[in-house]
Every structure is written in C-alpha cells, then in structure tokens.
Image 1: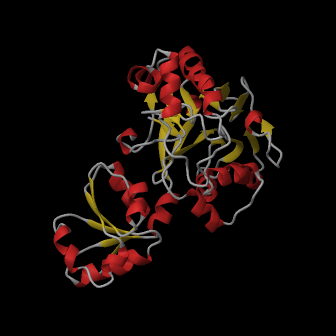
Image 2: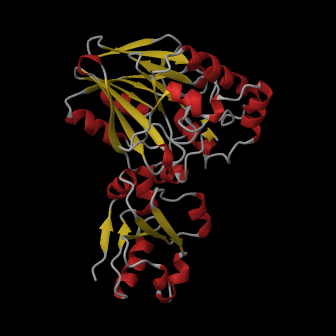
Image 3: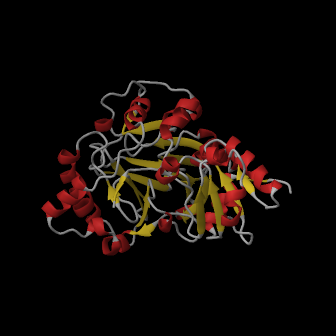
Length: 375
C-alpha cells in the first residue's frame, strides 16, 4: 500500500471539524507528554521510534483498522519510515508532512468579525502553539496585532486583498514566541508600536504605545484604542476596536488568565493583574467580544476554529475573574504557575533585538506548548 502524506493544514481542518483521527506519535515519551497534537476526537498511541527499529509487528493490533491513522515525529523522517513499515503490513496510514516542526509553525486564518463601513477582523490561529494574532482591515489599510515570526503569511494575505499594512502592534514584549512585528514593519514601512514600559532594553526604534492612544485604519473608519492593562508584563496593553472587540493580549483568555512571572515579577505584578481584570475590564461593556492572544486548550475553539467570547460571559464563567478575596487571588496566581516556556529568556532577548538567532535556532526556542496562562 502507498503511504499518504497529511499536511498541517489538513490536520487543522480535522481539529476544527472535530473529526476522528488516530495518531501514532513516535517521539520520545517525555516530548509527547509535554506537547502533542490536540483534537477533541483524536486518539493517541505513543511508541518511541527506537522501539520500532526491528519492526512494527508488536503494535499492529493496537492500531485501528476503521480509523484514519497519522504517524507523527519531530521533523518527519522517522514518521515516514514507520508509516512505510505499517504500509508494508497492509495498513493504510499517513505521515505528518514536516512533523511537529511544521505543526508548530502552521497558521490558519479565520474571519472573526465585521466592522463598520466594510471593515473586517481576521484571526490567525497558530494551532500547534496556541498563539493568536490579528489583522484589522479597512479601506485598503490594515493593522496587525501580535504577529508571529511567520511573516510571509500576513504579507501574502494582505497582498491578496489589496491591503497595505500601515500599523503593527505588539500588546507586550512576548516571552513564549518570537514576534514578527518588527520585521513586518520594516518590510512594509508600517509604524511599529510597543509599550515603552516593556521596551526599556530594546535595541531598535519603535513608536511608544501608551494608554489612550488612538489609531485609525482606512480613512478614519476603524478606531483602535489602546487600554493600558498591566499584569502579565508591566507594559501589557489591550486594544478596544470600534467599541466592539477587546484584544486582551496575554491578560485574559477564554478559560484562564495571564501569568505575571515571565519577567520574574510574579509577586510585584499580581496586583496589577487583578486591577486590570477586576477594574479596567469591568468598566467595559459586557457585550464586547474578547479576542485573546492565546488559547490554552482545544475546548476554547469555537465551531469555526476561531477563539472569542463575550466579556460578560467570561465574567460569569472564567474562574480567574470570580475570586472575590484579593489574598486568595494572589495565592492562586502566584502558587499555581505552570512551568515556564522553553527558552523564554532567549525569546525575550530576541524580541528586544539583543540577539539574532537563525531560523533553526528560532524554531528550537519555540518548540513546545504556550505557557502564558494560569488555570
């Protein structure tokens, strides 16, 4: 039987559509436990590649004949060999093109909203990493928020809809992934905005992003208002777009809240985090739609694969917004912190412009799940 190839885009569609898939992951057990392809109706078998060098006979019975089977490894090579061995035994299987390396870098674009006078908001879902970035489009102009380092995807999409990127924002100095914001601004001539309190050590020029800044896109039709909301970092800034959407950065997620320790300041910043969530956000309309910069678990995806929810719903259902006692909140946030992201110090230094790793180094730095939340 021939071995089939499945792309990250095809796997993403299965995630969005809640389809069934059986995944044979041949990475080491520790890598698999740390980070895997998540799907609501996915099943898993983890058998390290080195255990299969003498043949796949011992696992044949564990692989269902009535389900689509995908073999996954880190970079593709091992999964091709295992898939071929299974194929030789008469099974129909696919391998993941590019392996987990490709999965980490795949972006799926979803339209999440309409704005006045024909404006639109698009969400770019980095499905394997949990990162969410945004493009606000109006009258041939666009603003980009929290772009990843896969810059070509944004540039090609803007080009395909005859739109010029004029403003690029980072809601904060990221510690879990490498920003593509500065590179996109350089390529397009756009203004690059960064909160100055997060930018004290950056080595490049930027436009300071301050509370109350207003940026208009497309002949003043779309208004993007900056809302200072510290707590994840000291400079973290949210955006209210047309009074309809709240881009919450890494402060508020659908099922969790931001962690305050990635610059080593958990005890200092937990009070800022509480004030942003419990005071600044409380002043906004319950009807505003929250668009976060991350999702943590696959359950947070909507039916179309997008990630969003009304602020009022989050105030009702998100546990992190419902801890009345301030000491209890402080304890929950500072004592329940997950492990810190891989290479987060190096990622911060890259985003400051202090170091300039090559593409392979950047991939290695970003490997693994996003870990920016407290649940």
